[in-house]
Length: 569
Image (cartoon, rainbow, N blue to C red; front, side, top):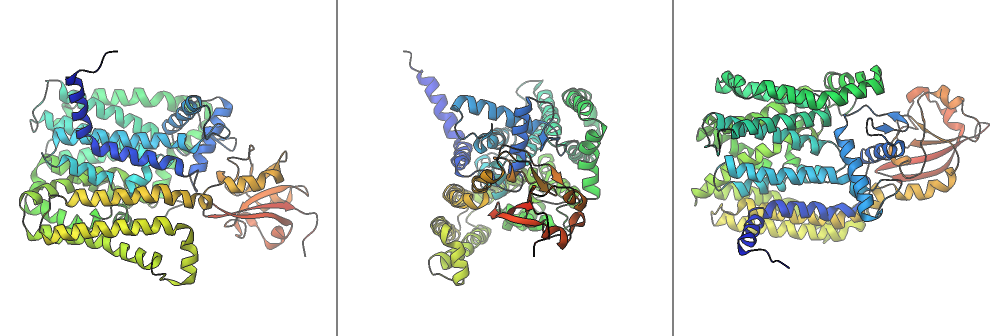
């Protein structure tokens, strides 16, 4: 047996020491993986798509309830199916039901987030301020929305990681091109540009032309600010466009042929242009992203005014790298604010750039301590952590809030109490640092506190919450009643109703379709849709259905209904 050389061991120790924050972030995500099943509203839909792709033996199109699913392109479904196949084979089917397992379907988001944080750290060490690398990684790794989307079965983390890395790679190439950073070889800048185009193409395959729209707007805004449109002829744009076309067009062409013109129209036009200009869901006012960011970027949001003043006063906005980082935040915010449909996860790609700017401010602040600003910012973060900690202490230890709140909190008292104590301890440490006017450990102590709270909430807390958000209890109760029988679903399917039941549920949208059902037919409806008049549903129609099963599930309610021959009295 040959032992590794001392030089190899030293390199490994050095690598682990440099990447300790990304490694801890990845371990946090992996600790959360087995703690919950599929949660509403989107996770069961993605799981059902993978299940039907496996049943059909296809890689070309995702299917949902027997129909081609046209909401998003194919990359995320390829990754989920690949992880499902590999996970089932490697583990002997551990946790798998009907070809799917929640833990396997989470791997694409986890790996995208984890790989990005590792690459983000390497990029910051290469192109960002010395001494700010670790702080930037800690700010990003402890950002609530980044952790949440990193363990959720949704496309947004994969898309955001690809888009953000494409922008960072392009910026790296530009800084080398303009001599802002010394290159390691004459061709290094070109490699960064090509990497940017590859990631942009993959982002296109993950969520469609939105990746190209955002990137074009950002690069044009940056080059206009720099007054450097000459760079368009030097950044291998022609090769980049050809590369994007070569990677994207084969699947789009094949999917359009197999799915037909209607599928192509829905996927390209309806889900992108029409959703942006005339949304049908998640409709919010233009200012809503400010509200989202207050929670999604907590507690760093409190430092945003100081960051703006810092960039303006120190004229940091004159540096090309800072200009790009600022525009990478502002441009997506403006574009997404103009769209009607808004969710906090849509702007996920801006947080790496905010993290870099925050870390740069924290480094400069630490170098000028002791200072009043260190005390002020430390006090802000301490207060931000201390107020919710005191609220949780009051509710969980002092029984404040009334009997109803106490009853609702009862299953979660353990993780809530531990989380409250961790927040309170972190607030006290930060307050002590603020009193001493020290800023060296502001980011580290904040990130450590948040990371420990997320560890408690994402393991113990998720485990307690899972029976109420998952679908296993519903499946166990409904399966004996529907075994071997055709079941329909009222209005748009929520896949949690069928993902573990071993059958599909064709959708009924109109009262006439309900009338056509034979007596004894079974119907599943959500507690939200069944009472509504959608599709011409009246009280007379509802009276013809007997409720066989009603269960709270996934944050809502499902009902199993049976059609009767006559009206119920």
